Image (tube, one colour):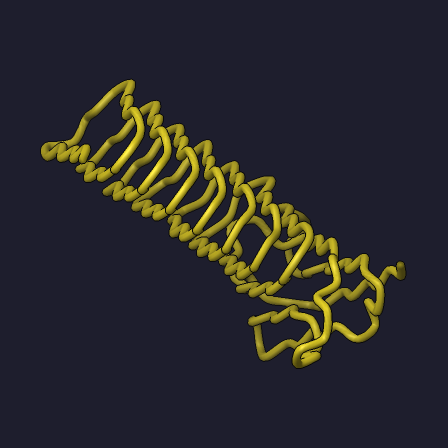
Length: 196
């Protein structure tokens, strides 16, 4: 296994897109003015790290039908940066405070501390967020969903999984085929929960 480290200069509000087919993706709030990417994997030097203005992209080299290698990708980004993560089978952790956040996984758990806006889509995996300042949406085929404080409209769809919300400040729409739903505090005007 090899380690690769890239440091890129950015302005105030960068966006970072990471694709990791298998392994771990960890994004941390770091210093303003730079994005630091560390890749730990067999063939880390084969990964593609590109920058276009304030948009950073990190993904493995296209290997066609070759075996997928596990990798650990850690990115330190300025507080408030927008984040997009795509993974086939990887655990995702966002530690710190971020802007608009989109996460797509086939399997793997997702944990986020503080984001401005959140959009999660996972086939199999638990999703947890401490604080979402505005709107949040989460779709999962199998996995529990847990949200702390959500400041905007909240939409959750799950085929199999429990839903736990500490506080919802705006309207809520939840659909579940199999699972319990609990909302600690609701301050919105419209609450729709459908359990099949």
